[in-house]
Image 1 (tube, rainbow, N blue to C red):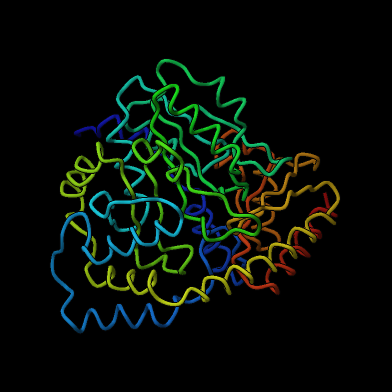
Image 2: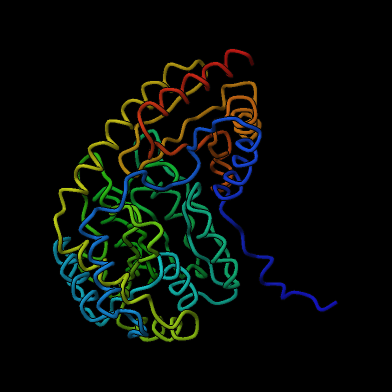
Length: 387
């Protein structure tokens, strides 16, 4: 029997997808599961975006397009970035089927075997998975959740070695909802310059913030040349199933990223890109309204979690995740998550699925109705009372 390549064993997965399968099995037994495991807005894609995609299909946008993306969408993305203070050249914008390919292309274009990349822990598990696949070593950097900061910059600075090639961060963060404030961005930019590092800035949740905004690190002096900025349409515009993302690559990396597209997926669906143009250039009040409802839900679930004995939860500054600390309870977070699903039909995630730094925490998405969140909190309380 031929054997698989050893490198595929280095790839991890997303536990949200595994829990979703288990939740479906519980539903098959007749239980109504409250789904808090998958990070997906529960709102429909705004109508004007849907209509743009349908119109594009009818107008014949069904053929191959440029590998890097349509000129119209790349220009719209550059305009959008200019509003964030980033002076982007459309030629350095790469449009892809979802945001993840830009992460992968960025790692493949910068990391070699033996290199190190500093990654958030807890953090989106695909970062460490992709770093290992490239033959490099992911080095964990914890947050400062007591201060609402997504990275502990003191730990990060001490972790830099001669083998460090990249710093990865996600602001607002999945799973913690913490952010990288402007002062930390300034310090991180200085460290990247001093040690000649690439920076991977995952800004997929950037539009979903509940406090003061911060500049993109790519807008800081000298950082456009060393930052890979990753973003997309899934979260802000409720377009998860459309699979549309983009990256802004430094001039030195952009041609390599385009070749990676050509060698992998050829191009992104043309009609979907027309929907992306409508999203960026159309009314933005739909995003503001969605974020306002997320804020209401955040406030409600954090308050309810705080009333459960043995549970502590910081207030997330962005994204749509709560990350309660359950270390004071007599069960491990993994066992608690399993019992919540099997006994209370509440599907959420063990924080350890986001790295060792997530041990003792749970991640739950509040991208669902207030009624569902209230019922989930009642079921959570009921289980804790029986422990």
